[in-house]
Image (cartoon, rainbow, N blue to C red; front, side, top):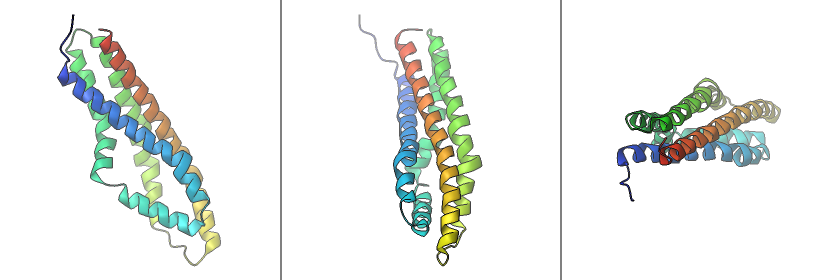
Length: 170
């Protein structure tokens, strides 16, 4: 017997998975590639490059995925509550909560304020000061960014589990 796909649930479920995967991958890539690469550059160059990235990453595609990933997960969960297999809703709600607490909150409380502070420094004439500022920034920023990557990965796993449960009819 074939069943008709439940498009109203499938769309936000798929979107939440895609956006969460994109965000987790972005944070992962920064922690394991971009930041080590910047750490290998002269500090004033690393500061300039990071400031340029921070200015350009605030674009509609990034911001939409960043903000809408947990919204889509919660929407999938809410729609699943109206279906007979409502047990699949809870992993989507958990995914939204993990993403909000582990991605959005640290971004707002730690990473963005650090980015703003880095944008305000002027160290081009003092290589030692640039090295001190970059060293302090990079270590702390990368730690919190890695937390965001891990929270994004957990959120993605939860959406996958929700989709699995939905497919199993629970």
